[in-house]
Length: 363
Image (cartoon, rainbow, N blue to C red; front, side, top):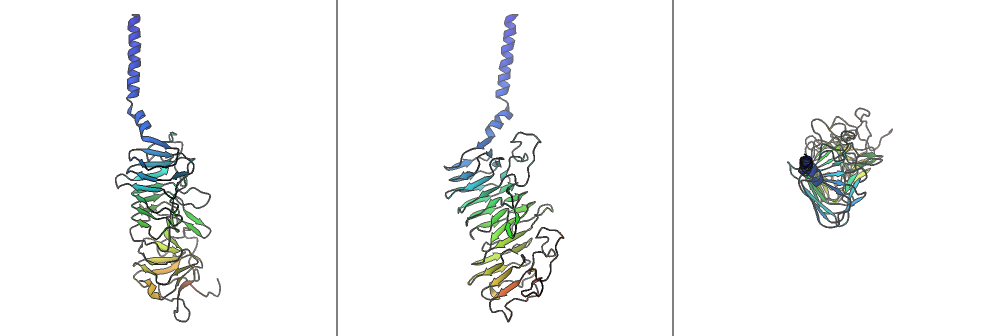
């Protein structure tokens, strides 16, 4: 009887070990989640069937990081940034069925409950800060999704193309991120106001962000980007532009307005700006467009549906300044379009110019 009892205990122990070792949930949890605690210093590949949790504060990519379709990258509470060094490069090619996701560790909808707190936490705008391309020239983000970025005491980007970075950003989604306005400085979720004019921004979706996109004047923008999903837009729903136009540039987006944020944006000599039909340019307070040659440098300025107006003008392309009905447009909200040698005043007086005055008697 005693021998039978010992045999039974051994059998139970064996079965326990067998089922524990074969528990697929436990095995998958260990296999599919990888914690990142060191910088990327050698060519590296992040697999599409894994979730990567960045835990290193001030995480740097100092070599080529290739991210496969389907990979999920989460930022922990202690790791807010991903920065490329001078030799850093990210090649992130997802696809329509397997996008690459960058999100908060609190986001259980992507990759499951990786912070293991059940329903105790939920993701919020600004859970992590940004990806800073830091002047690098050849990163690619294709079919990527960016959620809950933009951490900072003021407005903060989620992807920053600082120091004349060059990147290809196509077929991506930016949602529930920050951006916004610091004084008169506009910061986009996709912040390309100091990017190279070689940067490509196409077929992206922006919704439920504070301020979707800022660009430098020389970046071409087609009509492929979208700025709402199921009726949900962005608070400052526009493309905010700073710096001069120094080459032949084309703006075609007609879902939202382009907003001129520089006090004086110039179309330089031997440069031009071509506008698509139904394109609207809005101007921030006391700003103006200065054309150094003739009106022919502003191509299609009198095109069908083209307007030049105040940032407060919600009648055209909606509430771009994000204050709903708190402000109304008025004459002299902005200065005007100054053209070298234009008649006696120097300022255009086309019928599609609204709410400007270059010489207001009372402001």
